[in-house]
Length: 156
Image (cartoon, rainbow, N blue to C red; front, side, top):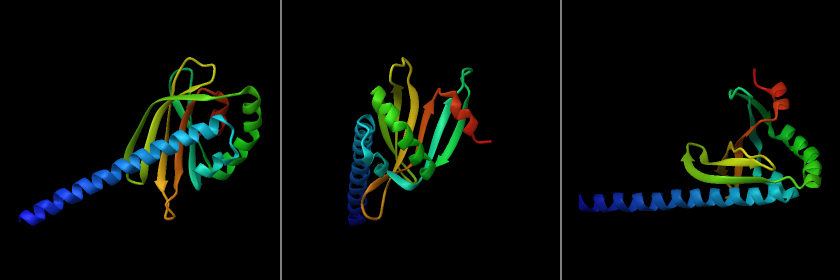
């Protein structure tokens, strides 16, 4: 009985360490993603799974929200188009309250995002998943936006 108890305690500490490592890895990857995004790195798209789900949650003037969901192929095209304008404007996002939690399909990194020149903060999250090759990729991303133009793409 004593051996089983010791084995259970050992397994608990090993699994806790693995989860903690995964959380720190995901937070580090998020930080690297933010640096790549804010420097307009062409490598930014390499952070995403080819099958990533991209959600833009539009915050309407009345405070309600609507989701506009797209696939990674469409998002990559949009990003390449908008990146040039963003670079000319030196557009950057700030992030705070970065938190990572284990979820069924990976690690969810949540934060508050402040778009450049705005005085409000919006919710965002990314789900990072460890791939069979050991790389971590974003498989889902949600960013709130006040850009009402996204409403025409909102899920019905």
